[in-house]
Length: 47
Image 1 (spheres, helix red, strand yellow):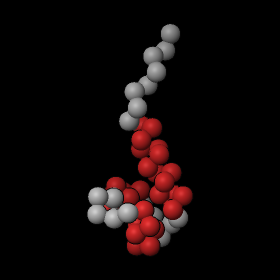
Image 2 (cartoon, rainbow, N blue to C red):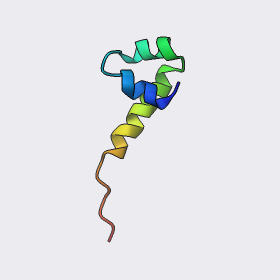
Image 3 (cartoon, rainbow, N blue to C red):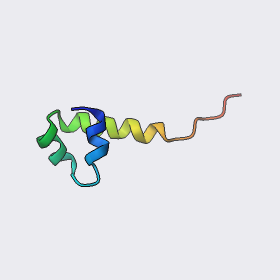
Image 4 (spheres, rainbow, N blue to C red):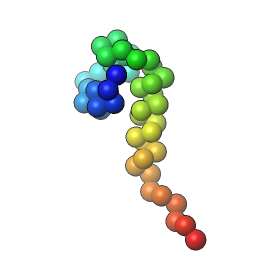
């Protein structure tokens, strides 16, 4: 499942629908979403 498919369809589909429509697993979709969430966090200041 292309990562872009997750983001393009997340507004209209839930995780189970994404898995059914595009293949992959629930865990893969959740991993993509977790990665995106962590990517938006501000980096910790380095000393």
